[in-house]
Length: 138
Image (cartoon, rainbow, N blue to C red; front, side, top):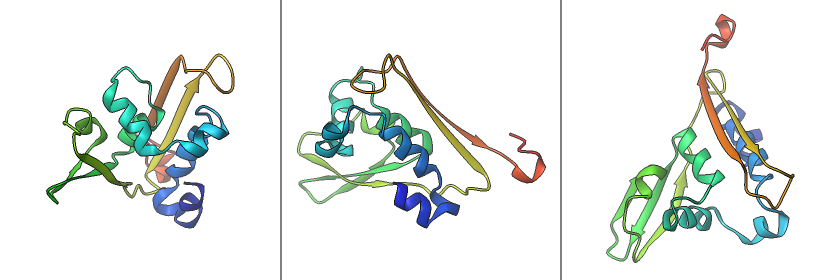
């Protein structure tokens, strides 16, 4: 995500916010083994699971491409994904939207009792559509 935010800053600068937030999830060994699809699957199976990844993907308006055994693909929001039966289905792709850096500002927060290996008290994400030419009017 850092690479995408640097190489395409005008369209995907929000990916730096996502990457910074992911650095706060669990610890390095867990992040090296875990996957985004696995995190979303945990959220799918347990709606109470406090998925930072789900929060951020929903925040920016991403889409998930879901494939099943019949060859039919469905595109849906992360919120819609929580409501479907995933039996014999697979998350194939996560589609990140283009968000103009001159128009959108994203922020995320994770309030935890310690820096790592603790569930957050609060996860929050915000996206603001601003007019940077007019004193950052929201």
